[in-house]
Image (tube, rainbow, N blue to C red; front, side, top):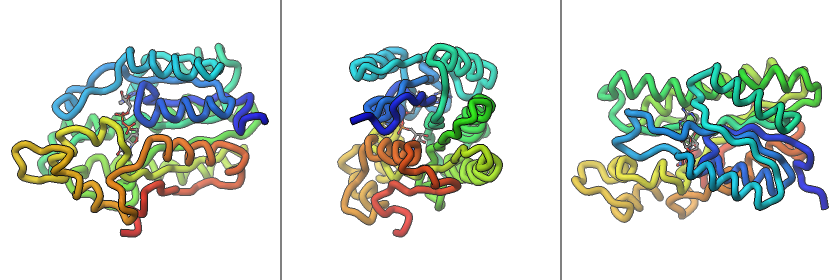
Length: 279
Ligand SMILES: NC(=O)c1ccc[n+]([C@@H]2O[C@H](COP(=O)([O-])OP(=O)(O)OC[C@H]3O[C@@H](n4cnc5c(N)ncnc54)[C@H](O)[C@@H]3O)[C@@H](O)[C@H]2O)c1
């Protein structure tokens, strides 16, 4: 049986690991070839909390996609750098022949009470999680329109793109911001059969939450926060009795939105959140 994305090419940012890697693998399992980018270096304001993706991690993504007999064009690129992103995207399309699906997944998390965030934390967050998503869409949209085959664009927002969450005001602002961009682009691009949607995960089991910064958010005031101490806090976010969900749960939503099964779905904010939004 042919895959649900046979013959398609997907452009995925933040693909070195975590959800981005999972998306690359899941879409490849359904027949897509992949253009993958990741910053593959650290950003100063994130370093106190956790390291960003590496070239070794990107090499692992490449290995896992190739093991599925799919092609992957993977390069380091920073979504904050429009020119660099455009160059890598264009090279990827030249190599793989087309683009059909865009997944703006790259993102960072840092922590602090909103009025105590530094200007640098605020700036890096908006630059990566809001402007980076704009850049990702911007570099790909002309190629999608020119090909005349329609397409799917998915932005990875968060439950924090639908409601306020303490200690991540800058993250919440950026994740709400991309919802506005999605709604606008969905209106602008409908005439080309290009659909634009956001996915809104609750906690996902990646290093972005599995680090002392997040543990301290869920165990405030504790001098030595651990996963165990944060467990009840993680779970308290969700309606279903789980502390977090798996990257593949988000990949399956991205796959649905990007396949023909989602062909009339556009402008939608899709929570994949164990009921966190309704709580
Ligand atoms: N983990 C969660 O609980 C959770 C919940 C809701 C939403 N999200 C969102 O999901 C997305 C994926 O996060 P994840 O959980 O896989 O975390 P992750 O840290 O494992 O993956 C994010 C990837 O993005 C890359 N990246 C960061 N800045 C970049 C830049 N400027 N240019 C290019 N690449 C960059 C990182 O190197 C990393 O490989 C993010 O947008 C995040 O905000 C995560």
